[in-house]
Length: 376
Image (cartoon, rainbow, N blue to C red; front, side, top):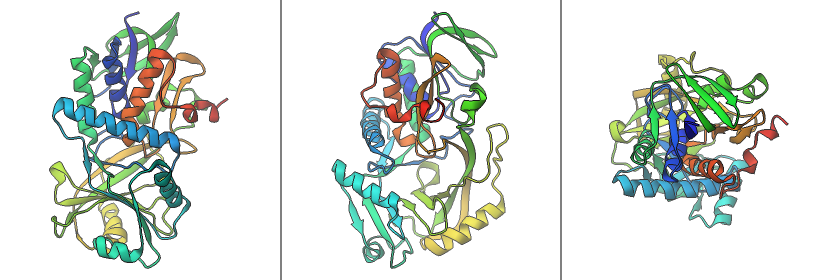
C-alpha cells in the first residue's frame, strides 16, 4: 500500500482527521478538489457559533467540550486565535422542547448559564426587541469559531507532521482492492488501507442510491448588516420565532466584517447541489431579511447590508451526524457531521475518527451516528 489512510475532502472534518492522524504518526494523504479553506462548500463566512449545552444529546456535549480543548491546544501551538467567547443567547417565545433540552443539558453537565426573563433581557441586552413572553438561555462561554482559520491551522500542523496533501485534485473513483482501496484522481492514483470520505455536500457523488438519498443539500445565505453603534456588545444568538421553522441566528462581525452583525436563517424547502447552487444573493433576499428580521427585531442594526455569502447544509433525515464505515466497503468511512450544527464539533470528530482508523475504537461513543439507523 502507498499509505495507511487517505482523507478525501479537507474542510472542517477532513482537515481535523488529517491533523489527528498525522499527530499519531500515521502515514496519511489528504486530497481535495480545491485548495482549502475556500468558499465553495459548507465552511465559509468567517464565523460559526460554538456553545457547550447541546440540546441534540449527550454525545454532542462530549464532542464540543473536547473540540474546545483541541482548539485551545492548536491556538497555543500556532499563536493564533480560533475561538472567541462572546456569550451566547438562545431566545424562545414559548420555551420550546429545544429550549428546555438545552437548559437541562447545561444543568446536567454543570455548564455555567442563566435563564433570563424578558425583563432581564431588556435590561442586559437592549439590542434585541423581545416580547413579554420571551425567555432566554444565556451561556457566557459561548462564542465564535473562525472556520477558515481552523481549517488552515489543522492543515498547517498536518504538514509539519509530514502528512502529504494533494490540492486541486478531484477524486473520480474509489475502488476496493485486496486489503484496502484505490483512490483515483484526475491526475494520479494511490492505494491505501483506509479511506475517510469527508466531502460534505459532494457526498452523494460517492454513494449508491439507497445511501445518497439519506443526504440532502440545501442552499443557505448569510447576511452582514452594519451596526449603528459598533461599540455595543453583541453576543452570538439563536432566536426561535413563531411561525419560522428554524428561527434566526447571528454573530458579531469579526476580521474583515468588523462593525457588522452576521444574520442568517435556515431554509429546508429548496434543494440544491454543489454544481448547481446559486451563489449570487438577490436584492429581494436582502430585502426580506431586512424587513422581517433587522428592522423589527434588532434595533442596533442599520438597513445597510455590507456583505452576503451562500453556503450549503448537508442534512440527514433526523438531523444527526453520520460517522460510520460503509456496509458495502469496510475500508471506506463516511464522515458527515452535518445538518447545520457540525463545525463546533469538528475537531473532536476528527480525533474520534483518527482513533477509529488507528485502533478500531474511539474514546467518545459514536454509536448514535451509525448508518444502520437509515439503511440496515
